[in-house]
Image (cartoon, rainbow, N blue to C red; front, side):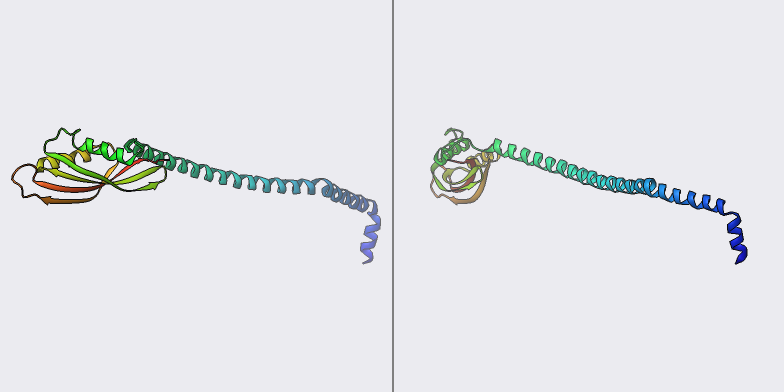
Length: 189
């Protein structure tokens, strides 16, 4: 142990210089390097958070594009429905218009509308569905033309019920037909 103390005393100035250099380096490290590393760690964490935020926004953008495409498709569907909606506001006027449509404005001798009746109406958002009952006298070819005109019409019309009875009279139309249809029209205020 004595040898060590003698060695330390002989090289005391060198050891003090080495220790003081080490203390100065530790001091500089604590004042300059440690704050730099903590700042780097903080910046890395911020970068990671911002990358996560960017990724979330990208996901939201893609979902927004999907939603936009869905809304565009719905708008197209609504546009198609609006083209088929009858532009009248009165259900009885609607029944008269459909009657003229299916009988070629009364010029079809094989089809005669005896009567029509508005059964009921139901509000569906901005539209109104009206159910109408038509009583017809028709020949088979007249009835076929009636069905064909309804099928080819641009309006939103669907069959609800159809009843056909054969007439036993010698002259005139040989069928008595009752048709219940539903038509889509603009909602009345």
